[in-house]
Image 1: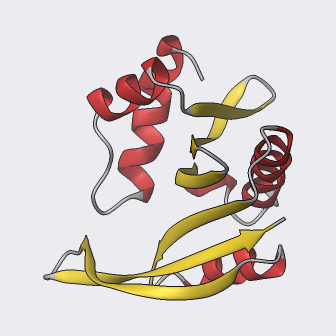
Image 2: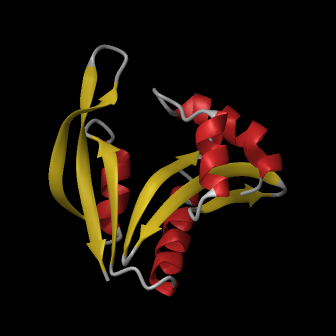
Length: 140
């Protein structure tokens, strides 16, 4: 991901997130030590991800796939790339939070070896109130 990608990334983020990241959030990730990627198909940006690595633990901060590109394996492709990069960076585990209502994402993560390790009550803003986050982890 580069600064030049942010307009497209922000368009997708607005489509797929109830509480989208701001330009400043993405810029901060790009200027930090976070790993930031975009996924393109035929020169069209269809997805993005941000991974944070601290010591030997990685956290998937964000992953998004454009609505029209969902259901075609792009999320899995991006996730597998992230996991490969985390291993190459010597992470011993990858953690993430996912909305309790996002069963599709939870199934994807579980199919790649993630396990539920906890819940953060009322973690995410929702259209009405707050929503729990399911914490998932994959150990290498």
